[in-house]
Length: 296
Image (cartoon, rainbow, N blue to C red; front, side, top):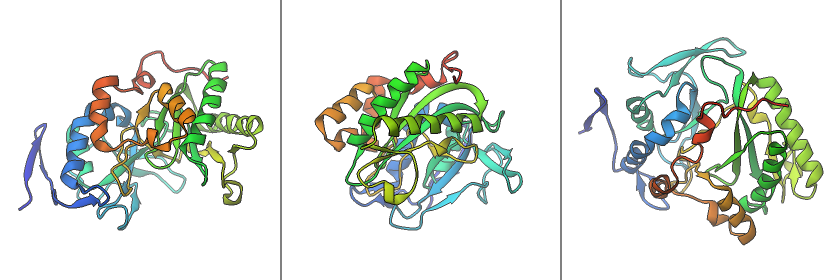
């Protein structure tokens, strides 16, 4: 029998709670839902007003994994949706605005991916993201070296960068920017990636070509395009273990770089609650009034 749970006055049928979604640790769907319920206070501000692309993995990472961008069939009428412009014509997408909507979406078993703009201003970015993706044998350790350079380069433009793990292999850098057309933010991000490659030629590549990437860090500047999305802070990822795209301190980035230990920047779902109690939301400054910087 599927249990019915009341969340903020909305009735939710939460299914298959004992199903193991992360075989490496035995982490179940019930534990996934508990994770989202207990981290909602930090996660929801990063989801709010941003149309969500779902990367669903209902049978775990080794089952079918697929993107769902349109409003899923059977979406309750109390879940807010919005029309989003696309090159092929407008579409309706989900906005996860509150705990009930978050728990409904989490019950689908999904990663959360969001653009760098909010629904009130499509293609007007209020964030910049640089996705640092290591090509083996490089790891997140090399990403930390690149992140340090990019942080200093952004600071020279009076832009303060924050870091989070991708929850997979790499690292994401984010900063709040004054509302700027996504095309211009993408152009600026590419300029940074090219400059990083010029400064660190043995470590960085700014082009996506696979043959260029072994042993280097690809600085993916294209995630700033209006049509693109990036893993939302605190989302679980479809991996063998319940890894999280977790905000980190710059001290942790430096410790990973100097130790050479990629495990220092791997965080599983059970670790996030204690981190929030110790640090709060390390990406909260992105949401603070007055935090946005103009692009040069």
